[in-house]
Amino acid sequence: MNEHLSEVIRIRVTPSHAARLGEAAALSGLSLSNYVRRRLSADDMRKDDAIRWGIGVLLAGSAAELVMLLWK
Image 1 (cartoon, rainbow, N blue to C red):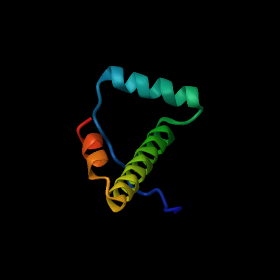
Image 2 (cartoon, helix red, strand yellow; image 1 turned 60 degrees about the vertical axis):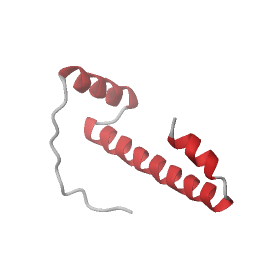
Image 3 (cartoon, helix red, strand yellow; image 1 turned 180 degrees about the vertical axis):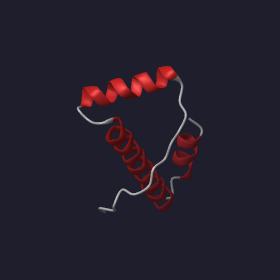
Image 4 (tube, rainbow, N blue to C red; image 1 turned 90 degrees about the horizontal axis):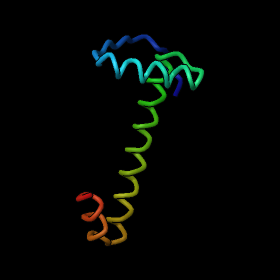
């Protein structure tokens, strides 16, 4: 999905967190905005994958496996 980037979100972080994010962005060759946007997208994808996996476990009838995962 290629939506137009029209919204701006400002967040407060600690100076050390800002420095770590800035360093990671620089190391990856991305602007801070692009780096954070990609991290958020990757987190969303991981959550979606985890949900699909959980549904698959439930459909397979292995509730015990799902309970073990949730209690980790």
